[in-house]
Length: 313
Image 1 (spheres, rainbow, N blue to C red):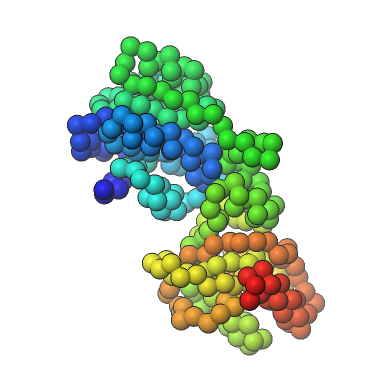
Image 2 (cartoon, helix red, strand yellow):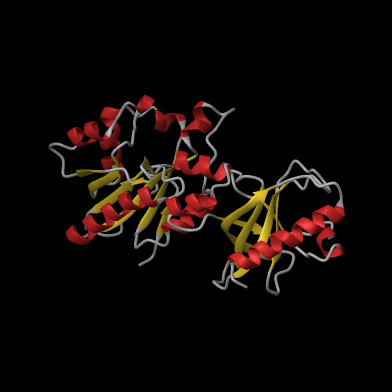
């Protein structure tokens, strides 16, 4: 089955006569709570027949309403598409969150979807999902709006872990705090970033620790520091263990633009221009400024040894 991608509701084209089962939400992170919503749509589609798809939005509403303090996203649109493509879905709709879309009244929201997806027969969203102008619409209202239509609405209970609700906000806070073990547990997969290897000042080679320099492409910056990582070519699935520093290199450069510098613990053939995927495994320590290159080199040796123990090398 081809995974179709649409950049708006207006561009959506239904390819089969069977019904449409739609999971709806922002889905930033596509964490274990989001996955229960997607699974609800998949299970209903398997039972009733028809196509199962996702309706999500970009950018985050905060970009429109509080542009000076926008919510930073865990996943870029590129990463989000990659994650959704791993499900057994028929399509993904990325509706632009514009002023026009934000002005749709909550009472009109269901009809707004039905007129653009005529075969819509079920909607699945988290029980705390809000919609419509001013975010006044809730799942109780959506269920009531569906009465007398051919659309069934399923309010999916929130997922809890460690006594608290799993949410994108919770994961963002943990990521900024460097709590990577919890981040990966709540995501249900390893947090990752993608970057293209660029040429640096080759200082790593001069001190005997060559690194792959990957400018950070994400919206939400994790805590600056040293991490254990797994690295692979974007088009392959062979993972190399490594230790990485993410930050602004205060000892040697103190740049305002963060960089992920990866030292691989096993040899590989990656070079400038290679596009790599990095799975962040554990947080080792915060980034710090050292008195000089000798002190930095000594700490790097400690970091490498800790990483080797982490990977049992």
